[in-house]
Length: 503
Image: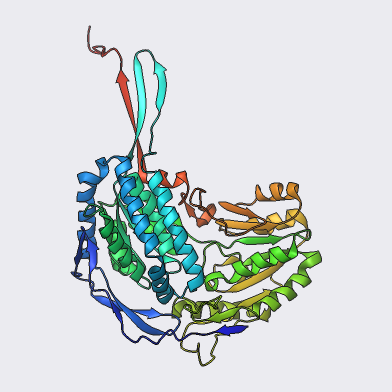
């Protein structure tokens, strides 16, 4: 393992954000206060952000409700599209600064963030193109009755986003919601709120009507819970952990809340013996440790056909030792830290679980304590061999750079192991056999399956999970559906209605 180091702590001045963004104005929290945001690469505060309380959530929802009833809902789709395109242009221009801020906030590697955030501008452009596509249809009845449907925005949307990829998860939630004509109250994670507040600044500059987009950082147990329970919020869109989603469902029962969930995964990454081994290894190692393992789509269950299993184990071990772990702002860094101390502890605990279950720790598994990185939340790229699919490291989402290499014999066993999980978000497979690629890909229980590639996403392709990995889709035309209601209108062509009580 190589180290790439740059002094990320040279600037000791805290970046300060004092206001929430509610109703088109920057306002002080009523009952939430503020907290320090910790740079995971240094373990020290780098920013101060405001925290919303229950009263602040009430203010934000009221502003969003007023905006929905006001100009936004009835604004022609092409006018909403123009505002979203203006926002997308501003977002694109802000990419260099946003990438640095997100690197400081969550520990993402600058070179990856720069590419990802630049692409997100195109996502916003794509969602803008959908703003006038919410079209109904006519339904044949008979000569006396004409029926047609119209699609209406559902109302106020509460978007609750995680700490691992804050800007991207925000993009795929607020983009389609705003395009559909809904208004949004965004509650980012308390760990990573800085870029959400920067988005509010861009939205304000773009000229969105007051209350259309509101940003209220806060803790889940009060601000988040109150947003979920609020009677004037029509839908919650959430990315996070399944246990939290279950609590949300209970919290939303009283108001019959609707939910969209992206709840993580434990993706199988299948390598058949006939695959292009070098390309498969490139993808498998990249997607075992990308973003320090903090990705819902992480291909951490690496299923390898037995004839090449020992070879792949050796190659994984060699690759792990060459990963350049270091400060996120260093252009040479390939893997940064865990996003917070709690996640570091969780990952290290799973390393102990894996060893206790009898898996072979091939390499890694320790916190990095070199002088340059010792204060941050860095952990070595980790490889376990001899893993079976009943081990916890193969079944539970670790959210750390831990790859579990599982052997299999033939297609049927590969499919069986791949599907033996409560999750079903993504999957990948490598083979030169086109027939096998089609057979296997169509039997894997996952919302997105990659063949001879991995983590290839586009704004126009639906993304979401099967089983416990979530509800609804967050990209493509399908992304509009959760934010629209269907109205059916029946029109009599005769205007005649019989007197049912005539003698």
